[in-house]
Image (cartoon, rainbow, N blue to C red):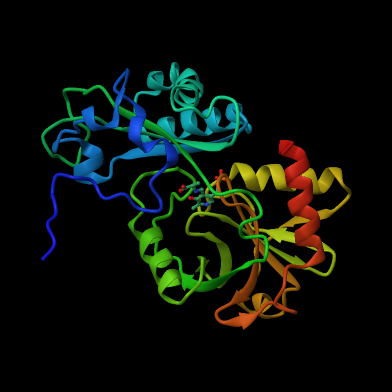
Length: 300
Ligand code: PDD
């Protein structure tokens, strides 16, 4: 018979290195994670009524933090959550790195979310105008190159809402599709709407057709990925032609290369789609070139 303590948090392989002394930011204060108490009336908890942002830092320096801050402000405006909460948050990103030992070396990400705050459950915004709840933490993430050999992806219908351009915390459709990918032994699900491939459940999606790089244009149907933007800029600086037009389901079958991008995913080749090899089944030359260009752009 084994004994166990229900009060003890399980240590899992995904527990960040700094978990023991983890300092998080909650409602204006830096506190130990164990001291955070979220109200059951928080609209994030009850209604998924909130937005979030994720930024990555290499050796203590954030990649494109200004763009992450701009996207955070835009998410707040579009979700009609008080935008003033964003003002001190740039400092919070940096401070969380420093307070968790990521300030000088290694790779770390900061996750930050803002909900509409605590109020009795109603669909309409609370008349009491509660203070938004702000929570942020830092964690390490896997080294670039871990997935350089490529990953599998599956295609799934995009059942999300039609404001995918706002980085909202209500992610159940993304979670369900990603779980299906995991159950199929794949890393990501590429979401298909109206016959075209839009993006992954937590990544932007690109394909290479001949010598042209293709990805969906910005619209209400995809998140304006910051890594996507950095990769497009790096490609164009290097003379690579990028066309903002999504691949149709038919074109997916014959694409030469595919890859996904994201803040913590970086640039990762897709080598199988729905169980079939993408061309040779190994990372293509253009993808490898873009992986290097992205590394150079963020200088790691
Ligand atoms: N995911 N598309 C979706 C639906 C995303 O959730 C993400 C990011 C991206 C890539 O965006 P960026 O390059 O700005 O990270 C595209 C984050 C990291 C997440 O949910 O954890």
